[in-house]
Length: 397
Ligand SMILES: Nc1ncnc2c1ncn2[C@@H]1O[C@H](COP(=O)(O)OP(=O)(O)O)[C@@H](O)[C@H]1O
Ligand SMILES: [Mg+2]
Image 1 (cartoon, rainbow, N blue to C red):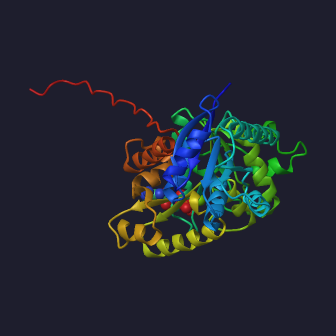
Image 2 (image 1 turned 180 degrees about the vertical axis):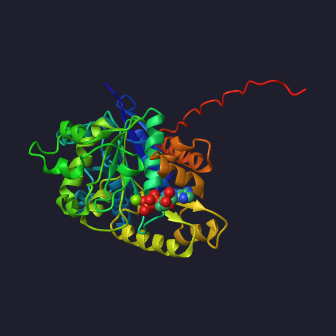
Image 3 (image 1 turned 90 degrees about the vertical axis):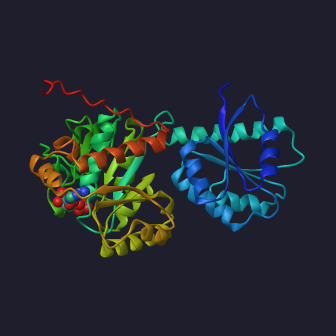
């Protein structure tokens, strides 16, 4: 029998051991332990456990429920089971409301029965996931490139990172969700008349065949679903369309890179909810920082805060220091990308991602580093760098 990957979530070290002793070794592989801190949440997300056993003694605090709720936003395939020593009908009902699939007792239960319960819940959950047409085999990540201000570099970084991920052998879909002013097609010099609007209006509906028909293949190997050429068509795309498109793409791609407009509306909020990570692209100046703060607050209210990764783009010596930024958000910056105007311009003029237009430039290096870091956080593996070819030449006399 295949072992189920299990993680124990508890602040109480003794309780962790009690739970470990309760689960039978044949059925489960304990992939780790975690606590109810933001770091603990990140650890869980990166470990992809199939089951999280959330163990609490006594009354379950409200914070545990909200922790689970936020966790399930980013780890949707995980089955959460609550383990408690004081089970009541109220507790079971409340747990269900927060997405917890089962409440099990700590005491008075045999290891075999405890393990059987977990396996049953997990199997039922698996069936539900399969019924939802989500493949467990492909762990697709939808990554949003977001920010409340235009011109910060969302599109530049989205196309650069997407092309870089494709170059690393990943199956990538780049989705231009800037429905009014989307410029991915232009930035990549793509020869296509088709867009997301043609897809949602097609009588065949949103199917993978139709997505393939309306998306365009880019020389990097990635697929691109473009925004409409004219902004008057933007309203044809609804939040339901966006959710369905991302859902249907998932089994076929390892990464869906979503280029966002600088706006919160029904479509973008739904897209945020359907992304696992949101890269907030900001520049190193005070107006941009203020904008980052507003976005952060809104995404927090929408229960999306855990997904935020700050990316500081166009970095030069400036007024806003990285330390100030980190103090403001109690969260580090995922990566800083240097300002490199000649490469940015060349990239636009050539209709190529910066990584292709000028691979040795500081902008290309920053983007490649970002793509590598993304792969590393998901897989724990740093992509192998191509060795620089040795220059052959004559020795100077
Ligand atoms: N790191 C960078 N250094 C210099 N210029 C950049 C950098 N990143 C983006 N740009 C330039 O900034 C402008 C806006 O970028 P864009 O990606 O279109 O922003 P957004 O999609 O956020 O509106 C473009 O002219 C682009 O070439
Ligand atoms: Mg843009």
